Image 1: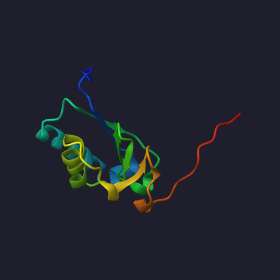
Image 2: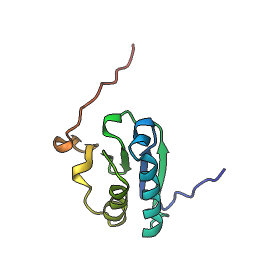
Image 3: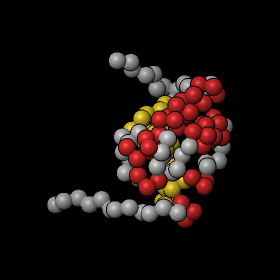
Length: 123
């Protein structure tokens, strides 16, 4: 098993590969993001992880970017490439129209998405 050298990592992209996201181009989004990372020459600064369901099936395909904590909805292969080119490589502005949630600002008013069920802890 390979152990990645993460010492130069600046961004971590989590790409949902759960059932709903896979039906909405999850595989193609994953391949496009990874290809754009290589083409842009930022593979030492960006680590990607395929996840299982992130619990936002209505917003498929979902991509989460760290360290910003932005959750992107309805991602397409081209939007994935744009994320790498504009946001990751150039440390540019996020793709505002696709952000559904941000650690800094919570749910976005332009997200046009449901808040979902709450999580509770049992006593």
